[in-house]
Image (cartoon, rainbow, N blue to C red; front, side):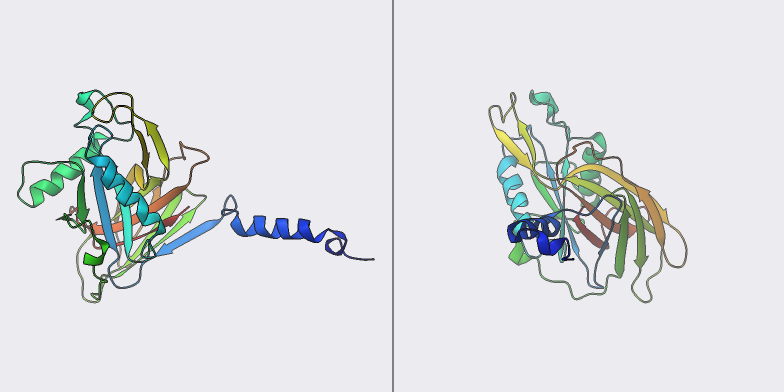
Length: 250
């Protein structure tokens, strides 16, 4: 008796094969993201839908989706701040904690002001907006690995550089992709905005032990049907500047 596949039309076999190739990870599948020993750069964008200067920066940020350095050398995360909400349009992606994060950065480099759009590269203000200016790191920053189970449980392990001492802290952000918003008030009234790498949630945990480990749980995806990604990074405990980062699409 001929096999089941041998009796199927070739066009149907090709269709099924292509579907398997482009389908996302099966429910319950594991995803592992890892850095090399050289530092993977964490590139943060502080933005707001209430800021008329932000859309060009967001478009530049979105273009990172097609950049071959994405996840390998650069991990982008977009934090929406809430201090422009009073101009007439409350940004639904903004959180007070994200504003606090930006203010902490400003304080660390001696500034009492914050602004949008603002890029921060590896914990330092970055105005170049030119990826060519971000050189590939050659310094040993340790190896960061995260195993994501069920798209939510994130098990993070960090192997610090040889001779490094200290206490470490793990961070995991759930990122939303292709988030569209039709702004009806404020400085961007009438504009259709699209956000990528937007932080939907941020979790933190200490990493005790000789081999630092932590397990974080991301919230359920509140935007079903939209692509999401995860970004993880490690810092010295009590510090905000990242030491190593990794990430990938879920």
